[in-house]
Length: 329
Ligand code: GLU
Ligand code: ZN
Image 1 (cartoon, protein in one colour):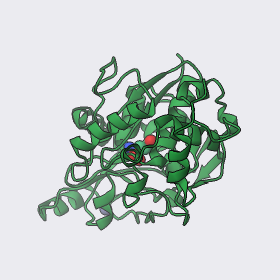
Image 2: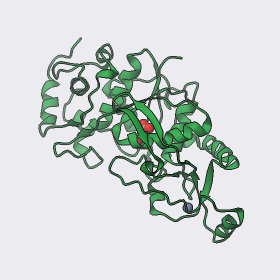
Image 3: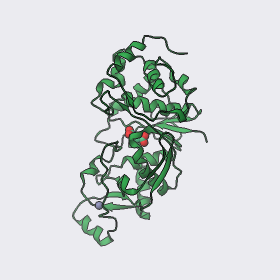
Image 4: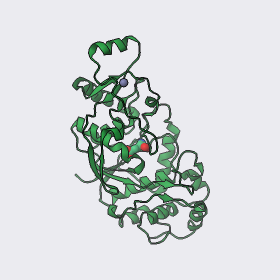
């Protein structure tokens, strides 16, 4: 089988330059190998996901010049491609985990359980689970059920460190305390965790190459625990540096002016942004407009930068300025 990659946006906002960077690299890493690409909407967080963002993301990706072979719009052999349509499948796997003791019910009330449906990004503190419910016997579980609280389901991780080799950041090794120990795969309100859904989907969709921001490098060992539990081979990992604003902050929702739709309104041409990002990826000598397929011919994952990309204050005028220039090829 050839390379199978994916674009896995969460429709909780519109795409910004940082997302464009990670998705462009994900696209290039597949297209450079003549592989196939899946678009998967990661809308399992019912509080934050919105259909209008999904539509906006698809529009922005197309504007950028990226395409995919399978997805919620085009279908494919491994669908459905929207996580909200895959809940039945997550439930089946979870039932199997419950039966085999790979997970256990956790009755702890923790604010942390609120946020676990989204990928925990860098700098968000991961508290280590103290193991409170790990060895509850049936009587102890019944006692807690009786208080009326529905449990979360927590993955049993054991003591073993997990290692993997990242194409950019090299060999990684994490002991359980570093990823927080036993982690929830389903919240007490029934919402599945990002970790769980992303691994089940990547495995079911036969994704063998994962490209994403280095802010979720530290989530990977938890995902390896799940791969082991389902008996599937983990993908090759390519974590890419982050895009930061001029102050060194990772781009986030409040950076509305870096959204692709706002760039578009400001007269930035998609190939100007692609050229800028390709230049930052070391694929172009200078910052000039360029279509994505021209970059694919030059792409080498070995040459990806390790350093985060800092946007200068004048980034918008730079992009608008080069938008006037003719594109390469
Ligand atoms: N939907 C996840 C996010 O936006 C994707 C993470 C991943 O690529 O595994 O953070
Ligand atoms: Zn607990």
